[in-house]
Length: 503
Image (cartoon, rainbow, N blue to C red; front, side, top):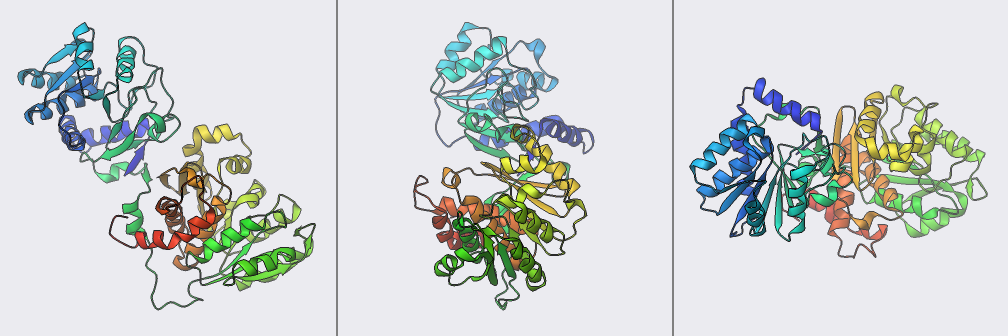
């Protein structure tokens, strides 16, 4: 399932029609058929389709024709014919020949018709809209929103910016949105989450290679198809020997949660590198994790700990750093030490702030995984967090292109996972994960998966999805949900990803 910007969607349509030579009316017919199949299986007394002046309106008219052939009562409300696109003129002639009731959008009878509907189809504007909606079309959107009637939006709710999720003046509020060919970024961002209702995408026969520049939606079907197979004849050393560096007397829980999640994600041998004062706490909590308690000062790693870390570089297959640490000189030195090595490294939390211009990730060859949330990403790039919120897709793509060994997991309610020219999106927000410790468990899960699958991007994709899935599978209410509840559900999440059955 692809995710496209407004320009990408336009270019895909153009190439399908002009390069592949698929007539636009054929694509429109495929869209209408898929829309017909997407309508909830309910007997409607009357469906009213509100059409705009373009191909979104033409899609609505094509749907009206198919509904009429199924003997479903349907009518169309349309703008003046001098505003029709060429395809809309053709579709309008067809519905007239089938005697489908049609109302000009300035006719007072059209508003009466709308009020009698028990389903409304929003076919006013598609993803090409770029300016605020005004005049008669704004009036129609307000009329649609004023009714307590089920609304289906074709491609995108009219009035929603396809790139940013901002409202362009006024916007239809849909109960179900059927994205044509690809989901649009704006449907996932900002107000898009509030106006789309249930969001689905339909295939209309456009070759997949035309989506080469699009992002992909990370869903259950895809993750099942890529989830690595664990060798039944493997042994602990083959499944990876990992060292997790972190913790302090003020935040012992962060490294503890990260390590717990790492172990439950399949790592063969796991050790934690922590200040001496919290070593016993971790050993008591997790008997299956080995520990190195090292010198500290004021509850944090001392300079002597750095020397001990240098001695560990050749003893482990992969490392993580950042969970439960503080922003101070030793953290910076440890991060630089690890990233200067030839070992795979995952950097999270307080370790991320030191990955700035003085650390040239573009030249690093070993696998590198960064897991910032929006504020941490802003600090990493030394820009305002509002810029990240506004242009997160471009920023992630640019960062991954400039740093080809880096897998970037940008955490938020909509999580982006980027690597080189590839970008996946997890669109499965849950308030259960909107708590401290959720990011620590995710970092541990990704590292644990990487330890035995040896593929950083694969580990990130599977880890991000399993993290969300484990929260969804829990019987614990999101209000009371804890990172420990998440770890307890990891087994069920991984079983689900290795099964062909729907959870």
